[in-house]
Image (cartoon, rainbow, N blue to C red):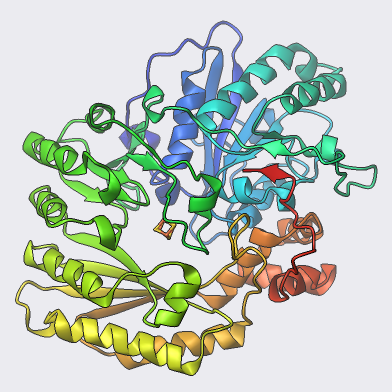
Length: 530
Ligand code: SF4
């Protein structure tokens, strides 16, 4: 674990006051990944900026996923002694680490077993999609924008802290639940549960998700920089949120349909929080090239002397000007997502880039000196036949041939990323089944096999087992509590602990994922209004 002293921090001034509340900002992953998570760092920035709040970070100790902390990262406080812990979960598989973190710290995993602080709050894109697997664990699940609901959650805790810290904890907690329940974006599972802990509907009431009106009203940068982050010392800056492209499998597009953009001035202000010597800049968006001022932004930062990189680009909007600007700013690697080589599957998933357009973007990137290009592909659709898989192989081979990859002289490489389709809440594919592990394995082998030893090609695949686990938590319900509880008590690798949990608590969550959720079936997240 790197020494926090080696970090560079840029928090705004804040006033903890004479009797602050002490809040854990937790990421159920290791330090290097946590510090490279803009979502986690923004929760920290928001909470730390609130008067009367002192924040303490909590991350996994070691990358083996077996070592869990009992103390906070900075002051080594006993985690149990905190007033509240905010967990930031970008990925569903993090839930297993989350429950083990609670258990190791000596905090009862189930809400009904907790009779004192800390309160447990959970947010992030994964529970925003489907909070139900965590419903028996969290005091509140924050649905939507942390910029709005984290300060509101802290306000409530501050209001009730005299009761919560004393003998009247339960009374204070119940009043706090009632208060939170009046706010958009707060899922208070206790108030949606019957005596047995099962989901209790509220006569058609829907829970709202919270959005920010204007991104510029809030800061967006990583307040802590460390060379131990998985991307190195990089200041991540969000330039836009949501995506209007609506690919049928993509939750990002359906939990935030608005598609909001930050102004050029705001992006530059956030990007310049660290000096050239301190950090490079990562511009974060699912659609970087769609931003009308993006070329301006990248060129201005390049003129300043910053190195700039971007998250994945859309084929349709990565113009020659943008690629040239990125190259000027030191970008050596970009990613595109053609997704498939079969017209039939592309139509099915609602993503149809012409082959010539994908090839054009690869060539344009190579031509300006961006020499590593990652291409994301998806497999695992029921309609996908051997012919469709062959088309994907032919498509990749054609890109290799037509881009002249093998004869280019700049060390160019293509990285082929292939992942199984995982059904996600609130998307048009939310009722689709996931294919079994053996089918996914065989499809991945069929597509990647021909390129295994090809020069200048790297293959990166998602594990079918890990993807299936992700699917289980993506579409699962409270029944998963039993499995999570079991997993929390084991210390083995995540996948084998999960297998043991299925052996003990039953395989109904697996069956729920593998069978199609018919139109009439009520989905666990159906009470959330998007
Ligand atoms: S897959 Fe990419 S382009 Fe499609 S909706 Fe999601 S973010 Fe947008």
